Length: 338
Image 1 (tube, rainbow, N blue to C red):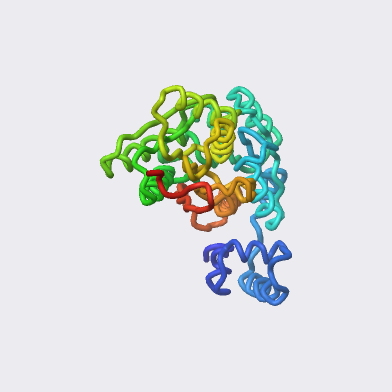
Image 2 (cartoon, rainbow, N blue to C red):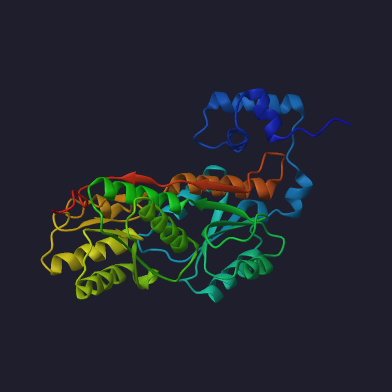
């Protein structure tokens, strides 16, 4: 008996990706009418039909994806990634159920459990604050895709950022401007993201025979205040660096505000860098040099992986993907003061 034709089969004949074929069959607006007609013709010739038994069994599950994030509405990277996930899912005729854990592990687990109870087909968990094994236990057989933060061993589906690469880029940029005394400002909780940034920063500084300085202050929920507190602590120490790399753009803005309150100019007296490339970094009065996290690519990849895990239609599944941030240079960094 010949194998049942799949989206991948149609794509190979049409010269399209399985995602484009799926969009065409779902009548997505970003696929041309000619491409839709060609895909449908091939599907008809092959006798392609969706797996209706599975669709009937998981009718509600196949149209919804759950997403749990630590915070929303703060102008953070999580806002950006949810927008990308929502848009990518809508293009493929899926909807997204959103829950914010407010960085509370118990609430995170509760959101996951409620979404599984509402029969989402897959869950996307951004920067998991709970123990991964507990989240997996709550979700049972429902596939989970982790974005950043904690991840389980290799069997876990995960989309990760290479934050050690961020550190290397930050140190390379600042040391290239002549800075020898560079501090990393970071905060609690100490998770995978912070660990990678600190480890990468230490390694990049030591490769250049420079002494790494790491200042932890406050927490991610109040990153701007944490940045201000870190600057105050450095000023009290009497050994202020010529450059600051901050764990987030919010922390960088807090650091810049504190520096200005003390009459210090950015970047003439102190260079400041952030991470994430959030919208306010473009404002002329900030002009923040930062590391751009590819949220659009991560969001699209998360949706493609979620749908592949829901439909199990023969398309290739890549369980773990790593994305690299890129350097964005603006006006908040400059040559080291002599």
